[in-house]
Image 1 (spheres, rainbow, N blue to C red):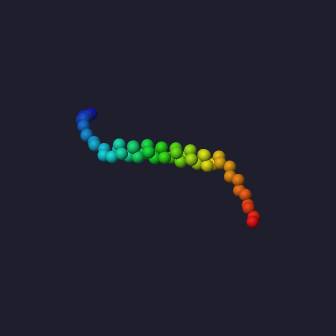
Image 2: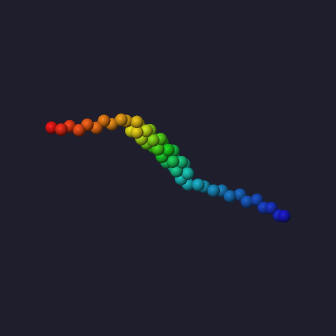
Image 3: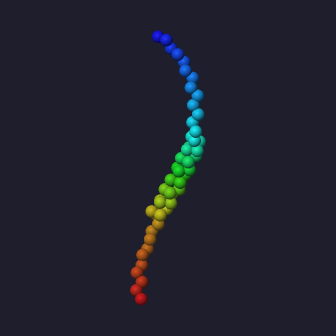
Length: 51
């Protein structure tokens, strides 16, 4: 069997930007979950006022 080695150089463009955006998205999701949990724990009192 004859084996040949091949070297390939690959430049990936935009990976750092995509990772940065994904990390920001995760931060926003965590913040949204925290806000949703806070809203879910708020007790509302509704009163009807008649004049």
